[in-house]
Image (spheres, rainbow, N blue to C red):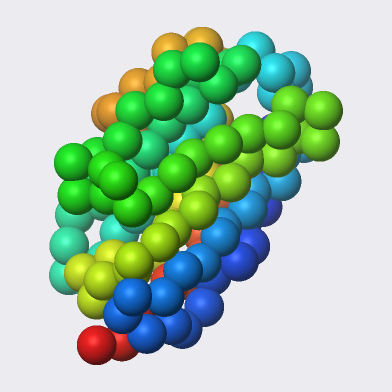
Length: 124
């Protein structure tokens, strides 16, 4: 049974930083690709970032490239999303996801497990 628990969301001002964390339990974490997706108010769910099992391959959405950094700690079964220079358009519920495969996909349908999400609100 896989469980993903996000934390670290909150209310910040534009230009601030936040670090999201995701604690994973269950199957072999170190062989799975992990990702972050988000869904803002009235918006479609969108890809944010994804990382391969040992972190050599990391994909980012164009909208966050250069501002967000995804990382993972396989020993602790944790993934992180460091978000800098936050903008109001980053306001969303952020979801941690796990794929049974090692490929850091950009498509939400490729991910098998989802966390409950953590709210990030950026005020202008």
